[in-house]
Length: 67
Image: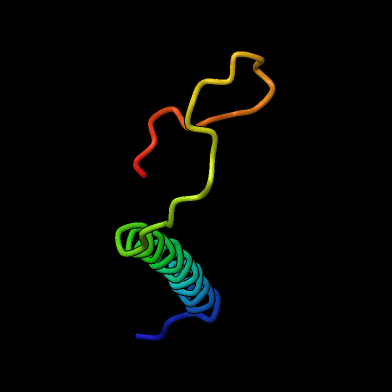
């Protein structure tokens, strides 16, 4: 049984694009895992901000300060 060159090239091309799609999916998954890891392990420091309401409405303040 001989496989024609045309069939072989289509098969190889299909596997190439499947490999490319899997590689892209792995990169996206790794980036998301990294973002979740960083968000869970980092603790941002408190920054100075206005604590009392500003009745003039000229500056922003934290809605609920954790500091």
